[in-house]
Image (cartoon, rainbow, N blue to C red; front, top):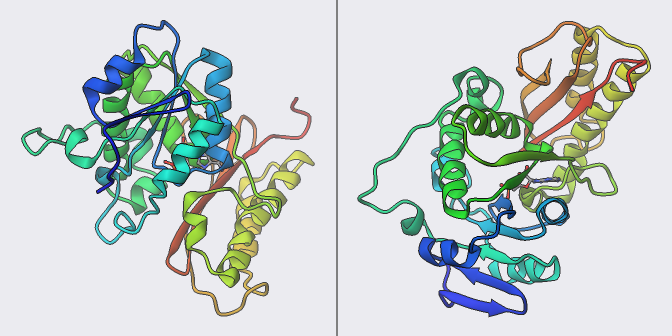
Amino acid sequence: MISWPASTKLATVKVVSTIPECREARGSYAEFGFVPTMGALHAGHLSLVRRARELAGKVAVSIFVNPTQFGPGEDFSRYPRPIERDLDLCRSAGVDLVFVPDVPEMYPAASPRVVLDVPGLTSLLDGRHRPGHFAGVCEVVAKLLNIVRPSIACFGEKDFQQLAVVKAMVAALNMPCRIVGCPTLRDPDGMAMSSRNQYLSVRERTRGLSISRALRTIQDLASSGERDANVLRSTMIDLLNDDSSAKGVSTDLQYAAIVDAATLADIHRIDQEARALVAMKVGSTRLIDNVALTPAGSP
Ligand code: AMP
């Protein structure tokens, strides 16, 4: 449980923890940008804040580690919650409103679970390995969009399937919000930034770098003319299985897929916009990453 004053004025940031306070603080601005997060903020999150502010002028961030999107045995209880640091980062980034509810505020005991799903997109990839995950994501995102009522909401391509699911849900339910996808920010060594990277030991991080390396390699191969997705997939898997950089670190490659960027269905040729996606456990940390694959000759 997080403890801080219910409503704190931090420079220009209004921090609220209840739904009525959030509604009131959001006010009646026509344009309001929104970045939903689980906290432990990094430069990737802050790039979404910048984009939301560029597009809407005002920006709200939510910080909520959503229990309904974690499965049994996942890292809900150990997920990092450095709230004071996060609030400082929000203040420096010029966020107008931070919504930091606790679990009973979002899921009162008397309130039923509501299951939203986009089965065509959620039964694949992460949906296979994390049953119930996307139902939890859809539920919390729908609730947050109803509470904050943003005109635009920014989501990272880092979680490419999540972005696709949220876009589809918002369109299908006619929610009055534009979902904006934002590029993945990487550390200088190529690793996609993630709040979970802090779980990694030095050797695990070295091993985990095979993910961005494999993705970059096949991205280069695709842009220099390789259109056979099976060739790209097996090249990627070979690179992911190469443990020469950090022998003995345990890994579990959950998927290494090449899919149509719109439907997320497996493809055999790179003819239209495609995406390569990887999920691999390194030690006990589950890492995901993805890149766009563009056929040679495309703009
Ligand atoms: P999370 O706090 O992990 O739920 O992420 C909140 C939002 O930040 C999601 O839309 C993520 O896709 C996005 N995000 C996470 N990591 C990155 C990154 N490295 N670059 C850009 N966006 C990111």
